[in-house]
Each structure stands twice: as structure tokens, then as C-alpha cells.
Length: 196
Image (tube, rainbow, N blue to C red; front, side):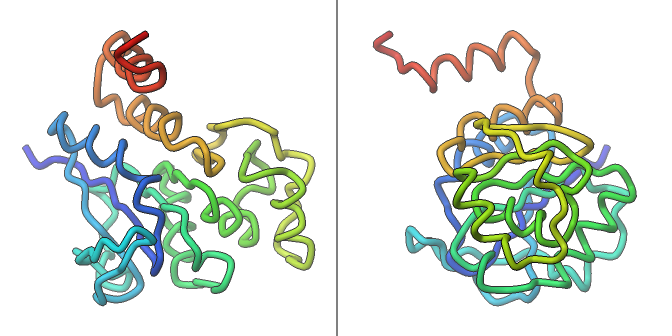
């Protein structure tokens, strides 16, 4: 039986540490295939200097029947670009009830394209988040912003920049990668450390 895919959507200067736990968690469970996708096939270099090959372009990924989730990793380029082709791809997935997870700057991307207008969501610090979106006419979700490490609502998982572990845990939970008790132990171990 073919495994469903989880797409790691990468942009230039992506925040590699924000995706590390979730990539490892999914890959080690062997329940889904993690693939990379972007607007083009050019390798994407992370903030930490990792040069990552791209498996698919958005243009060539037409059939979403085998897609379990899209993960938008944070990074520097979300605030600098419109990325309309990414917005169209997210809309297509959302219309098919495929979950979308975003962390850090990627939450602002979802907000400015109107995806979070009717969903409770979070992002980086409230004042910073609103300042970044003050001139964005596409964002009408101010009342739905929650000051929290992570929010999961209406098919969108959003997390702030300090929530990589919570982000990973929620994604693993939604994908049902591990039994609930095992996932709780995993989170506790990596949150508190082995010495505690």
C-alpha cells in the first residue's frame, strides 16, 4: 500500500530547526513519506546553511489524492514575497480538507492571503504579527488571533517561532503517527530532558 505524503514546503532561507523534530518523527515512524515542494526545482538553502533538493514543484503536483498534509516552514522570505502560486496551492488543499501547518513567518503568509480570517490562529508576538500585517488588506482575522504557542483550528495548525516541539507534536498527533501515550512520552522527554 502506498504511503500518503507530507509535503514540506520550502522557500529560500527556510528555518531548518523549525522542521527538524517533525521530519524526524514522521520519517522514523515510517507511516508517511516526507517530500519537499517549492515554486521551482532550485535547491533551497536554509538559514543554517543546509542545501535541500526539491522533490516537486507546485506546478507539477496536480493530484492531491495521496497528500496527507502541507507543512509551511518559517523563514526570512515569507514577509518579502507574495508567493501567489503557494497561496493557490494551499487553497486547493484546504478545499479538499487537507490540513496545513505553518510556523513563524509562514503564519503571516497564511494571514495575508486570508486563510486565517475565520480560524483561530497564532503567530509570533501579537504586536509584531499585527505590525507586519497592518497594510495587508487580505487579513481580517484580528479577532481570531490567540496568544499561544500553538493553535489548531479549522484545518490550520499555526505556531510561533519558539514552538518547534509543540508544532511537531501537534502534526504527529493529527497524522496519527504514534499512539497517544507514546506521543505524550515523546513530547515530555524532549520538552523536559532526560535529566528530569
